[in-house]
Amino acid sequence: MNPKFFSLPVEKQQAILNAAYRVFSQNSYKNSPMSEIAAEAGISKSLLFHYFHNKKELYLYLWDNCAETTIEYLTRYGCYEQTELFESMERGMRAKMEIIRLYPNMGSFTIRAFYEKDPEICAAIQESYHRYFNLKADKVRLNLDPSQFVPGLDIDMMYREMYWASEGYLWEAVQQGKFDIDQMEKVFNQMLTFWKSVYLRRE
Amino acid sequence: MNPKFFSLPVEKQQAILNAAYRVFSQNSYKNSPMSEIAAEAGISKSLLFHYFHNKKELYLYLWDNCAETTIEYLTRYGCYEQTELFESMERGMRAKMEIIRLYPNMGSFTIRAFYEKDPEICAAIQESYHRYFNLKADKVRLNLDPSQFVPGLDIDMMYREMYWASEGYLWEAVQQGKFDIDQMEKVFNQMLTFWKSVYLRRE
DNA sequence: GTAGTATTAACCGAAGCGGTTAACGGAGGT
DNA sequence: ACCTCCGTTAACCGCTTCGGTTAATACTAC
Image (cartoon, rainbow over all chains, first blue to last red; front, top):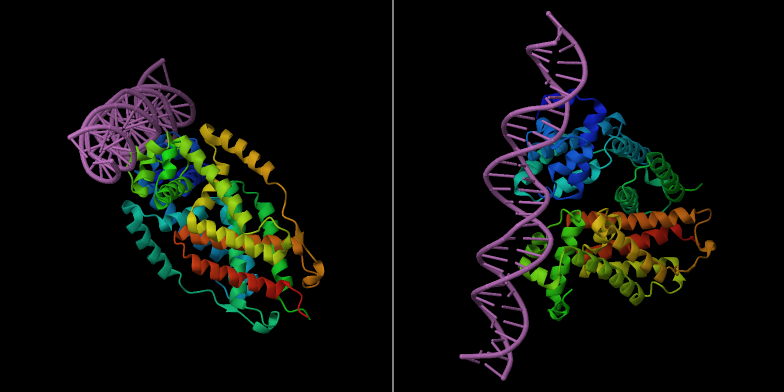
């Protein structure tokens, strides 16, 4: 790719990447036209090809950008550090919110890219995925003291439940295409206090 | 549309509809090629155009099929009848599972169609939506006895939490493109007993 | 056979694709 | 004033694919 891309004003870089994330996350690789990306980014198709030699390069750059941005924010918000369960959930959410603020459609793109079948890119994605996975596979360790929870609680189910609920809410927001991040953060905090109120042992 | 479509063997009808649901749910209207639908359904493009005069007609038929199928199954599983909260959740899930068994991608299609911006169909979708909405707007009434729950429970939050969790799980399954419905039903039952165990008052 | 129906290969003009080229236009130096 | 540089784009390229049609094939029943 053309290094001049990085000397663009940051907002313009983001506008381009976000347009690409949106189009690629809502269409298959094959059915995602470069022209649509350019138009949405507010630049000409020629300029888009000036920065990214071809469609594949843009796609794979986005993919790498996903991994790097994610790791960067997870690190910055202390998500790899050992903490207590709800604290860890909260950090994870804050990191995710910050990423959404930057690139609203990055999450959906990541998942789509991961399951993308097109032979032109599928191999590259999978290879790169395993590279990143091996790099950061050191799982997050939690301080899980079972006695802090309501007696008899199915902790595994609780964990999955919390995960699904946050994903479900996020998905709903993405579908509607509106990202009121302050509102989202508020809802997430409500969920968090709700979980604490029902899962934590009442003395 | 050509009425001969309905004298096709049922599996073939479903194959065609499912191919269409898949393609339209994973690409914008404009970027969804009829050829891709035909290929996935295992028929020629000409035959597809033989049954549906054009792309728009197919799309709108799918949309109507969503509404009708949904209403049919919700009725069949007694989801409009007045019941207790968890019973109502369970019926809703069973209905949804049965629909997924028939048309795995109908859910995602419905949502996408609802937010579709293409001027060629947007108006028709919205108009039709309001028609259906007015038709079935008689809200489900619940027997909600607050005393059956754990004291101090935020019932509204509990309700949203359950909704998001089931949507989140469903979405995860759809993303992966694998629909092991027995497995899904099992997980949903686990969620249901989990919810009861944490939300219902323990005597 | 033959009549009728289900299905498709081959085709149509038009549009859109990924990608290139040549020219424009504004800023800075002289 | 002119030139140079460079970010940017309009116009274009060959080609594919688009939505949709047509004419011929394959199949079935009599």
